[in-house]
Amino acid sequence: MLTRGLLPRLPGLLGAPGRRPEERVVVVTGASSGIGRATALLSAEAGDHVVLVARRADVLEEVAEECRTRGAASATPLVADVSDDEAVEQVVADTLARHGRIDAVLHCAGVVTYGRTEDTSAEDFAQVVGTNLLGSASVARHVVPVLRRQERGDLVLVGSLLGLVAVPEMTPYVVSKWGVRALARQLKIENGDLPDVRISHVTPGSVDTPIYDSALDAAGGVNTAPPPTISPERAARVVLRQIGSRRFEVQTAYLNYGLVAAFRLAPGLYDRMVGPVFDAVSRKRS
Image (tube, rainbow, N blue to C red; front, side, top):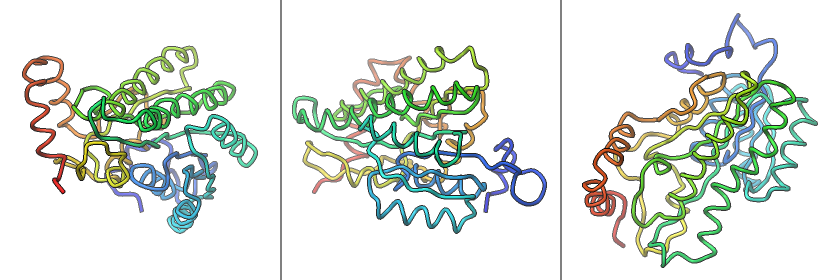
């Protein structure tokens, strides 16, 4: 069930007892694990029609079944890689064919890599940027025209705290997430003529998700989420609250504000400290 603290922050989710007259159609990418999976399950608890997008068919079906158990109006798994523009186009077409509209797209898919820039292979660099940044662009390219035709709806791009600051040995990821934030800002400007077409950007800090287990690693170590971490469920609540919100950008933890301030206001000190601190808290030696 929805937690009590979440209820007043989800406008339009619940009204009179029973299901809402018209359930929302919510597309969640990266729905097989981490923030995406948690977001999909929370959307299901709200009674939405949930469209689940990820690359792993077997896991997607498991998530779809759990969504149905938790109260989704429907749960549709669609296997797609967001770095494949044609696959993203097909996801949008299939969703419209099934539901006739899209109320919100919560774009959570992502991949991470570790290693110095010169040690990262061209293939790994391309995969990270292709999934995180170009995948976000493909989602926007196919979703925004739908929202504009409807003259309403939300596109929420899940970026990262590392789209606001820099850390060593994560250049492809950092570059991609800075790009995602820039993309979100561009989309906001370009769609300002339609007030009910809302573009927003969520910047999670350290979240305890499987993304670290599947990281592309050229640095030769075992990676872990640097403390303090938050749960995927906490991040998901922030993502889902962006549906209907007028806020362009939200953080998932107060610590993010302190790190951004240090990066901007004391760049020399930040640059000297970030390497040793990041190495100490985020890398376990094998």
